Length: 323
Image 1 (cartoon, rainbow, N blue to C red):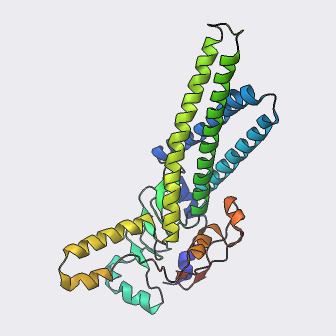
Image 2: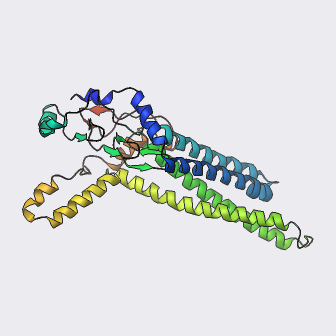
Image 3: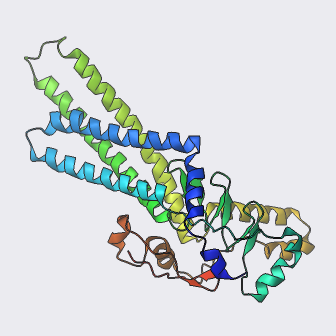
């Protein structure tokens, strides 16, 4: 098997994989919920927060522009994460002869393909650290997990956009939370200072405003906490050079090693699926593998990054990303 055969395969199988992924009912529902939540937050912030509280001030324009800029970046990053190829492993031209799997390791070593494995479901060779997704029904390079909120896998080629989406969602949640609280305080002060306002008037509108405030507060807190936890886990997995799947497999292997006889402990430890090379790659280099080699400020933008450069069958520590 040559490595070139694993890098070519055309766009047909990518389209088929994306169509399989898009048919996931849970993913479609999460996509609809995501866009509905974003547009609802924008509607409430503009019509019930900024216009009533800052209508005669320049802060209305400033806050409105800043909040909508964050939402635009959020949607752009989300779209890139949804429609980008996460790193699907191409299908071979011919199926693998599974009767010859016993000689697989020797043939791989002869051709310089150490670390490559065989996926019985895709019937193809896959590079190191690639895993099979049961939802997409394909093997994904450096697969992190399958996320229903983007209806796609988070892998080697779209993890950057997914992390950016989490970052801007957290910013939007915090921003809307601050705006709603400040507007609520402003409204309470105005009502207390207003002596001419008659009791019983504008009651339905007040109740509607309070309902929108409460819904947006709950949405901001829930989504904000949720995405910040995932954002932290993503950064930890990058700087430790270990995906959640690899973490789980390593824990299971270590657990089996602790319960197995001492005579087989060394051999079991040598079979760990992935041991992160902490001494080889500094944290900044690991971050650049995901976000690119450009300026750190460019890491915040959903710009196209070229795939990691390949040397043999292992990816270099500092790929040539054009951010």
